[in-house]
Length: 423
Image (cartoon, rainbow, N blue to C red; front, side):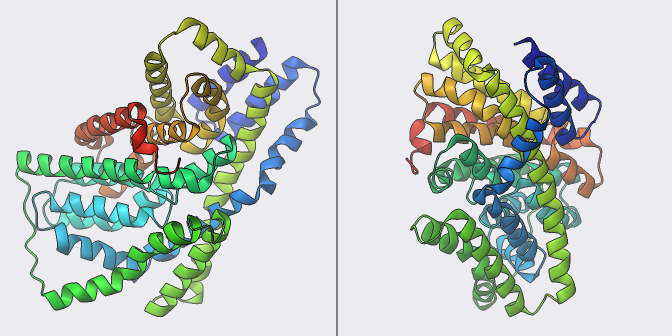
């Protein structure tokens, strides 16, 4: 176990030194193997490239491409406009519109970061323009973007499924209730904060004819999750990878139908997709190498054994798992955290009778909260940057969102029925 402790310690030190996560993972693995001395270092290359041939991971770039194609065109603007017209008139309406738009686009991107940057670049400046405080607007965008990784399709769910062996379709379906529960909680927070601070209402006049026109224009985005996920994937017509490819083709056809994309725009979307995919795949490859090293050293099994021997209550174990994930999520991005911690937590959850799919939702929700928690909150920094405000102001505005997120997390942890749709 000494080699494992050294590898983990080195990894944490490198993170504190701002070394990119992928390289920190690689150097920690090399150090651990070198200390063991019985395995050739070439094994790192072999283990790293093993996940690159996993057909399931091919879904990731196509979901990213789908999001980039749809969110950057007229369709994204139409969905935002429709949400604003329908619920923007109510108290806290701008926040409601942001949450509602995140719910719609969660069925497209599968990425919180994509939602935070794509939707935030439109919603935050607009909400500031109509009189809402910038910290509140940034806080809503940073937190509601996390809905994108809980409602299907979800890239972190794909990673968890590949690591744990559960069905992608099952965990997709199981994310519906937790995702909608979180969205409802954010709606309530937006309303409560708006009432308390006296935010202005948006007075928008629209006719039934214009509303129907907007609904018709937004219909492709609204129908896409239903067609691709609920019908094609869950109906057994296609695999998740095939659904991702069909979604990208669907998005391209919609953009061509709207006549708002050129060859240059398509190339730009593909370049963005390649860059984002490269980052994700490098994390997956390096995480796989460190996971292999931990498994060979039997670290997950020993940890599970020690926890079960010293903690008798399953409730306490679940609380400790949540606490660990909340801390890890504040410092580590979702992808490497899922790939590293799933092999560690799976034996513990199995021993206490926790369903693997429920464990997946607990992990994703915990790590999702970490996306808008300092010091390394990705959606927090994106939203703060777009709002052009100090990060402390956004964190202060996020306090009620943290509170309801933890309540939803506890509900998902201790009420198995909330994640039972896919089981």
